Length: 514
Image 1 (cartoon, helix red, strand yellow):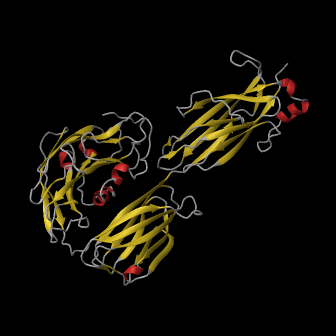
Image 2 (cartoon, rainbow, N blue to C red):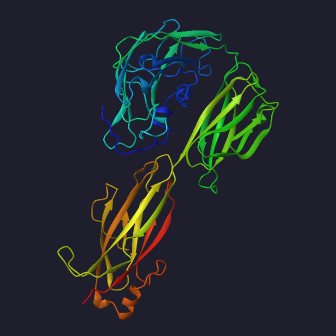
Image 3 (cartoon, rainbow, N blue to C red):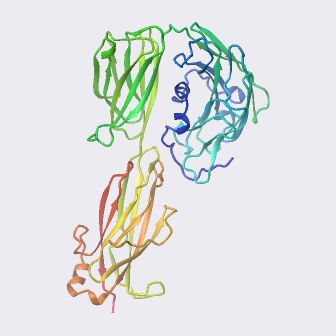
């Protein structure tokens, strides 16, 4: 397993392609990292927990035929099993033909998802880091690695409807304490029906830390079709075009999974992490005997009552949530509380890396130098430094920028030699026809970190073309007046992390001593 820990970072945007391709019921299982029913770690294989869950709202999950995406078995591997080390879990488990079987898209793969909760920063927060499927050699790759490094991998999978053998490796080296891996493994249920029933799993677990078999029992309870149950899903939306840059918007859909109508409910949106505030929660319940119900903020929590609205079986209502102050990592829990007190929720994540840029010139003044081994003509060298920083706890991107020089008569921009922390900038940069030097960046800007780029710019000097008044003008500086001194501008091409800005710079030029 290849590993790279050289650059601290936060997780990237959380909506991964592998997750988006999964059925809704399976995505719901990986949406929230914490599970209140998990036992506190005690060390060793006993820390590995196995749980079952049943999604009654899935297609056919209350029907008479075989159905997928209803019953899932979860395995959680905390880092207490192998703190700071790599370990492999081997799972052997029989299904219960006639009740449920393993869902095998191939003999070397089982339907499901592996999700790693950790950070590249040993002191960083525990968040969803990456996900993958459960096919042979499916991997969770390290974020922004240039070498294909990964931290978790399905190293062995043998799947038949009756039996599953799965070997999964996870590497907790350099990871913060509290990291863990979740496996959510899919099945096919046989004629689940519309009444309550229980499903069981009795796997055998061994690890490279402890070869002693561990034989937990997990149960998944399926409620009757008439029991209260709703599924909440969220979807990001674009805020209005004139909205502030830190504004956000998403829609929440509440689907009634039960054959019993949903009434007497409340809907709430609450910030669970980050600085974001909820400025508006609005739900259109007109089609269900209610109205458009709205709560306005700003607040960390907003709640509306369904009033007399009644959502029939297999119908759904839609709400819109508007946010402000979305900076860094933010999570909003959207929930519906039924009349019997049952709560169903979904977690919405919104990441906004924000940063700053500054530009300085190292020399207040430079003196014309004569020709030498590397400079065939009289010249001056001016060092311009651009500092790009990410002030949030999520990964952003560096913007590209351009240095545009405004040399007066007698000076000419020749080239720039880059240096600094941007490792990909090592070649000499030449100006374009307009006298500008483009500096391409577009690389990850990790959480609470930065890049500095210094351009050592060479200007050739034709002293004979500079009048006494020209030398006088070069001897004073005003960054906003190109007629004074040697002026240049750093023009930053803004992106989601750093705004567009122009930064004028100036330095004094004096004649060579005679």
